[in-house]
Length: 468
Image (cartoon, rainbow, N blue to C red; front, top):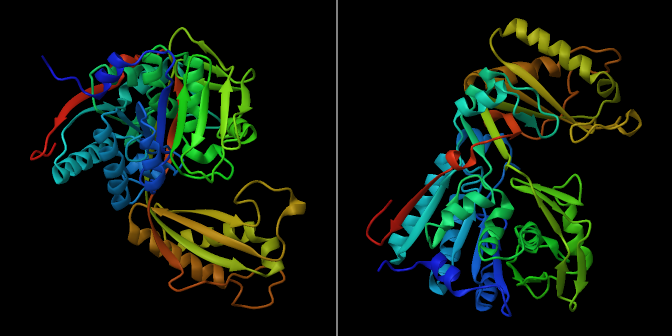
């Protein structure tokens, strides 16, 4: 008889009843420092399952386009070792999502390799199920041709060429895909790009808990103790039953209050009363929040309406080229008043001096770089200028930045009082290499997506003495 692993043991042993299901969120951003003391307190509460989110597209298009990790690798390794060791010792499933920041295949494989390396170092054995979230460009192009792509927010309409130029396209897998991975009886699930809630709700729903309660619970705890007063990164424990769930931070100094927990519905949501999931919509307008004591809150009342066919959120990014950045400060009100015209004029002048495929993208802090401001609120006495120079290679980008700097420094404009010194530089050289420039092409929902066919699940037996 094949030995049961952590998932099968849980599915066999637990049923909704008098004992609540204990779900521990170990990290909302694995790789930036799991608080070891809080994780230990959480594990002492004997959780049935542990989840850890690892990323999103919040850090920008660079990580999806290049396949690099945003978090520093030494910290990723530290956090993985902490949570992997704790779960294997306790014999409970560990579910990690959005591997390596954006969940693209190179990031998924790097994190899987790190798990294998940790097993090698520590003499650990476990079954690992990985979910590959990469979506073929042909699939996306077909959906685009058939009008099945809807942008999430003000995204430019992509062309077929734009889609095919994406170095990575990922789909955000949901509850159903994580459940397919769990059906392989793993000790650890490592998902590529994944819906945050799926990491924490998949097993509860498999066990028979109300999807509305499971998803609402997951929506809150995926950020660990961010829903507390004061907010933080400490592990968060949820105790789920058939009527509701109780929330408790594993840091005694962080308190889950009705107000702080209810306010978390505003986090990353345009509408705090509803949350769109791949398989349906979670409605929070009927949710109730009740303080059990100064530290814990009880939540109930959410509703979930499944849709006939799951939708799929897709994300795609492409490389634009090398980037250099020029930083300067301006305190001349006369230059600030005509800055847009001056930048255009200098750009025209430098393009004549330095022909080639480069472009300058300005960000003027104090004049709307962070958000559009009414004219009355824009700075007239001091602004910070961040000029991006994009070119096919780093030398060309640096050259454009250097030539632009000198021409901007001495450019004549109406009312100029000095022929130089109208820009202030914090350091020299004032033009800096800024890695590759990338942009999002896809931030869309795909209708009628063949979800089961798109997400590939692979099962690996990790043993000491072998690296996978």
